[in-house]
Length: 248
Ligand code: SF4
Ligand code: SF4
Ligand code: SF4
Image: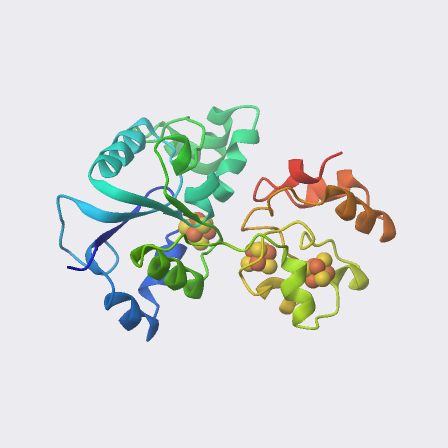
């Protein structure tokens, strides 16, 4: 019998779900291995229990925590997919604000008093429940999701690249963006996306997080070579919470 899998979303833009919904021909390979029993974007059905629950989005409310714990209790394996689920993603930016109430008023204006809007800090899924696999990215890479799900279903240990984006960028023979006057986090960012941003002239801001034990010394040397300060890079690159990784 094929594993029964379900997809759930919390606070997010649903871009990662769309990556799955738009798998096109790859969906056939995936459906040969799993039965999708719940997926709000594409199905109306529901199921009481799951072999694998995929969670998208960050956790921002008490009611989210209770819902997530309930899903965890009904799932054999739980996968956090997309950076919102893995770390809180872009939503986590609000945790840096001096006042969460002010954040709410800035975003919602006069509607900030709506009862479902809480002033809680944003959390990643792993801060609330046990996570069996994290799939990074904003959004996730479709090909990587298919590979990791296949590995999971076949009982293999799913592997995420632990080398930096610069490796993939160099393999594509791109001109380094530092040489074109732009800061790029490729030296410490986790690869696996095929260096899609620098390959299209856009600097990497480490949406997949950093490699384990990022080489801060090398990053500092690159910054020094191109006349940037660590302070400048922290100001530019805190979108995904990577800035502390490059601080002194
Ligand atoms: S990780 Fe990015 S693409 Fe995915 S849901 Fe969050 S904001 Fe959207
Ligand atoms: S453009 Fe970015 S990812 Fe590519 S080699 Fe330069 S620093 Fe590395
Ligand atoms: S190049 Fe960097 S920012 Fe772009 S997808 Fe890859 S890890 Fe994310």
